[in-house]
Length: 325
Length: 279
Image (tube, rainbow over all chains, first blue to last red):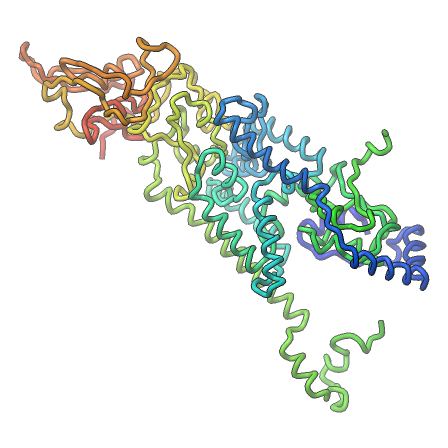
């Protein structure tokens, strides 16, 4: 089983596969066998017990991530209202210090609807693609998208409501996102209108805070209500085409969350907080085929798993940089 | 794990199960209530597709506004806007044109505009484009060419056409002058009066007029020769004149904004071309 292909499969909506016996590296086999010895089992049981007894919450990354989303989006607002021309435009397309930036998904829609390759968009898309490829692809979601932020707040509420039995989380089929992606692309091409853009919560929120087009946010409100009561993180998990576009960019990104099998106790705290838990399937006991694995394409690099992991088995890594230093 | 622990033993699945094995009373009833894994997956898939179909269905309702109230002839687009259909396809809905306009004439459409959500438009009566920026800044700002980059002078713009829609209200046609503020003291609209300040637009409410014959639409028109006043008869003593719009009119809407009658005697018909008949 090729881990890269597997991550692409999962990105498109397939359920994670159980690795076949021949997929495991010798080292991984040894580690798994070692973890099964009675002493190790006992040791792990004790460690987990201790952890649960002294649970501590960490926001080591969130305290940077939330302000990052807010600052990036506020830059658009203050650039316009104070007329300082740092970041002109909205998240769909902008000029950053005069350089063209274009959101990949918005540019794709324009190209499909207008049926012409526009040079400014090409420049903007290339810049943005390189930028997000460097920092992780779907890191756009967790570190820039305004909808992600409000959805995260709603998720916190949702989990509290679930605890009280006032809300439920109905899981949807993850293939839905791929289907919607194709459907929106086909409709945009066929109709010549940007069928997706007008309901894109990312675009809607970005324009609303910059230009005051608040009526659109009623749609965002509806999405958030559904997420609050019925489907946890519905939009980001099962629907958003922008997420899929950036997943693809992130599939080969050097900035990744890194998994260390040796340190892992397999208690699954990471999967509980993760927006895309399928990428953390390898943290289930016996699933990792190698002792060191970089988490797959769909990962938003939000670092919530890193914060949740009590043993430091998950950490950020920039491929190439660790060798360089 | 042994096979006996599996949820559905193979014997039960093929129906040949011995009665002694299948009979486990209350457990069976409980199991019937619970959906099997397969059923659950099916249900989840159907629900997901339903949600997807709902979303797609809803997204397509965005077509409705652009064939009804938000259609081309009702939306005055910024200078340089290409054909309405193509404009909505090419516009990336970023609002960079909004940001560069010195008189803030451009607004972004909101949700009720459907597929036009986020696309720029101008309400000339509230704030017309008076080309204060001199060099069609909005066109330069547009990253996609939805505002055509072939345009670099204000004279090349064709947003629509000025039409004397209510001639009976026109002061010039009555031979009347105009004294005071064109739109009242609370009107927030801006205009660049070159004789007052070459570079900065000021409020129309700060610029009173005293005219023997009202010629505001001609006087404030930013395009040379786009509109002029013509006497209503050959009589040399004729005081009454009527505004005449020429093929040079770009449809910027300055005349509609400055027209002191309420409602305005002269208005812009978006996308209309010179020589076309008004409906």
